[in-house]
Image (cartoon, rainbow, N blue to C red; front, side):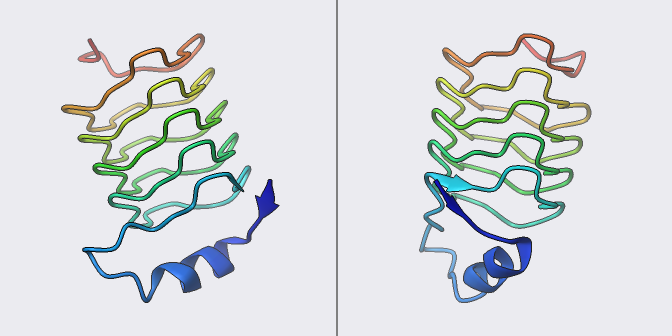
Length: 119
């Protein structure tokens, strides 16, 4: 997997227009501080986001199929319409996350901290 820093990621996102989905699939973003980034519609399929801090990040309609999110912080993140099919969210903290319409089919949620309204 390719490694990238927060600074490189932010610089790469600046020229992205709403009609263009950022393509970040397969990147190693593990342990990065990604708080409050706008990743709306991003393709993060298969990305390694384990132990990354995505608190308050906007992942609305993002694709995270097969992504590694073990021990990731997703507190207060916007996850509406996001696809987590087959993702590993073991130990992830989703406290206060907004996930209406998100797809967690086949996702690993063992030990994840889920909001009370998670169904």
